Length: 115
Length: 109
Image (cartoon, each protein chain N blue to C red):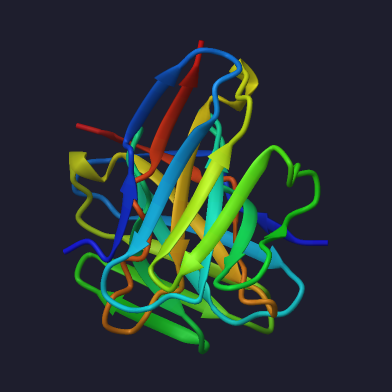
């Protein structure tokens, strides 16, 4: 079964709205989780590394004030897209490190559509 | 810099064999992944290679040569459901998983 749960699956909202996406590690405590973004017909781009109990580290070109990451517990990381605009419409996916027993380590993704 | 290259698209016939190549140049190497991704879905893990050689898993096999910065995914007895994108990804020295742009595989009946 799934080892990473992501919620919600779909979000459609108006421009200017802030959207929170949750990512839960179900089978073990994950001190590190990763957030990716995927635009249509493109590959997954790493946005940031979420670290439990400390600040997230962002990849070059990703606005930390725009994409707020919180990793307050060992099983939950959240990504908040603040004041979302149509160009933020994308597929957002979280993951943790794979393990030998559970290599399926991606969440199901959140499709975000900003009108 | 980090560079992972794979063909953009490939076409093969049902029942045939196809090989998808991947070359990489990354900041360190801690393993190479192959994923399958159907449109609108999250990636599904196929294989993970850390050491050189061939790993076989049913109809799918993955090969790695670290000295050449090269891997391939081999799909045998192709089925229509194998039509998907195949993503090559490298775990670098910072333990980040960096993806190539993916290969869209079209299977013809």
